[in-house]
Image (cartoon, rainbow, N blue to C red; front, side, top):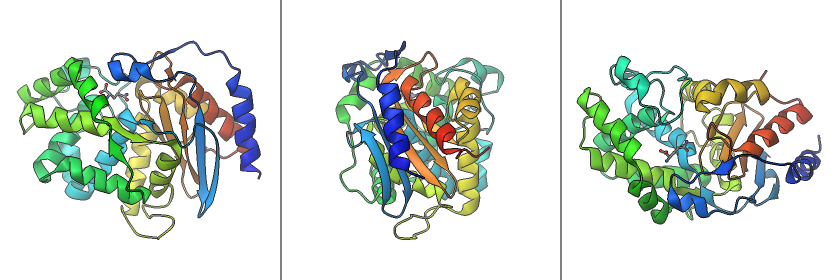
Length: 304
Ligand SMILES: NC(=O)CC[C@H](N)C(=O)O
């Protein structure tokens, strides 16, 4: 199959499409991004890459980072992790507070904000310097030492981060947060501020398409079972209250972020990242979803 031709067709068809959503502005710094940015990168095998557009420009990965922190927490804690966070789709927006009350402070899954904040709490408890260790983890699976936090984005999110503060405070009141609030939200705002390109994200996510092993070196990062679970969570919870729609339209495990990025994988086949900052009302990239729908339709390569 000529993957470059498939990507070029997607680029050509979608560059002219009308989009109706908006760039995220509740994090003031994110509102400054050029809404016309559009890039995609598909990593198919050792040295086999295809891309178009702004695929090597770094952007704010936001919630995509939750897959990295979950991977680290699973490495550290094993099965005990699931006493603190559940594995069910939420059907609610990513920053919702409502389920927490009647579910007694146990978040529905690790990809909604409440769940990701519990994962932060676990990493803060278990690591001396979680920010340094996360950066090391991401640099390693990406084989790229240029990856950094964007401290301006982290500070900008902190300045308006009332909902995330509320989530941590509420879970602390209900007994599911062990550390002080400030180090947890500081770590969370930094993980969300990681700046990466589509090319870098596709490479990093290759471990989830390759049974937990880095493709180029064969080094094992995660066990097969852990990867199976992470992929199951991406499939059922990666897009919040649009997880069903993403499965229906695209048919791959994936994760989105309000920076406009989406990464998806096809086990044993490929890893793909797309970036377009205009979001639909559920907080997922409008063109990103359309591009991935076209990819799996044109190639016939979805997991279903
Ligand atoms: N869906 C997202 O990407 C949300 C991440 C963002 N940092 C927040 O907590 O609101």
